Length: 538
Image 1 (cartoon, one colour):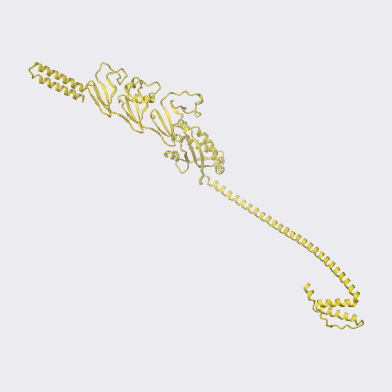
Image 2 (cartoon, rainbow, N blue to C red):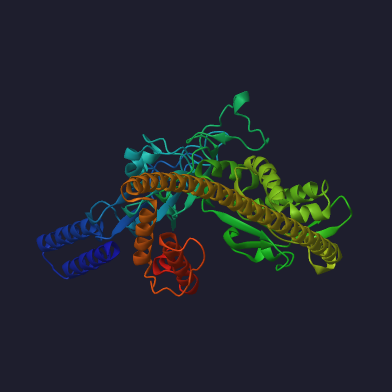
């Protein structure tokens, strides 16, 4: 547009001067020349104006001047010829005449969310020795250093080359002659992951003797120093220069590696994550010459604080770690198998697990890996241990049969002992019963004796009483009459018929004869029909 204004001014001035040449009046010709000069001045002044749009910047190059850029300089800061450090912001800017200045227009640099801008300066101070990136700017100077090229090249003391500082999301008026901007994604540390930083900038640390790693690997440094940072980045987003700071993601999840016959050599290389990695089975040889495969499962994790050690030793948690782990696992299992027999190896699986876990822990701790478990699955197969296992099976069956026979013998002995005990218990029961019966008989005997003695005493008393009574009766009525009365009483009590069926003859007839006859009758009656009371008594 500035050139157009200049062209229009020249054309108008020429037309005015051409028209004045047709006028005869000197005054009019002079007025026309003055008007042409005024038009030229006006349009020449308008031609110096440059307009910059709202979303653009003006990049100025000076074509005419008395000063040239010093050797090694690319951008002018003091009005020298060449690209100018100062850029034109949006709006009208006078004084930039065509042919003297070239003004190019560039878009404002925008950094979207989730990205950062990496800067590379084409001019500035030479980089300090032993550095590949310019020192990082202080946070309060980042905007000024990036957007003010003059400040960067003068007071700011900016360095030429890759810059450690980055542009965060936002818009910046950057002189494209000074800086090129490469946009990259922001550094994101995902969940259950840490980021191990290898810094290519910063001071080189001076290590003390006690800071040397036991494994002889690259030493860890503090944040801000050059090398692998001792403290990893935790979950989150970080505005890091991905060229100056290499961030290696390390998973902190529990991982499992399976050494199984189901996989083929190299299968582990096809697995994207060690959380489900498989390697071929481990072949071991025992002290008695048996060679057989062992299925093994290794459980491990990388703790956040140990992740930098892992990166310093093997580089990452994929191929590097797998190579080291495979070597350690196979060596440990093979070495442990050399000291035992095949059958003992099969039967002492838990012992092998414990020993291997202890040894593998010590070995893997050197590279920052924590082994949390060792599990042994199948041991051997039909081809390698089939005959041995069959022999062992037959032996176990024979031993079980022997044990069964012994159990049967023990059961028979116990049954015999039980029968003997039962018999003894029965005999003891019988002896006890007999003893009780003896005691009962003795008690009965004593009872009978006591009763007999009592009865004898009673009879004796009754006899004495009767005798005394007879004696008194006989005294009063005579012995014969007394005997007769007693007989009659007995007859009445016994219900004896008193009709005499016995004839008593002979001497002594009279009173004694009657008595004798009566006694005979009573005896006869008692022999034929025992008295009712006597029967009842029985």
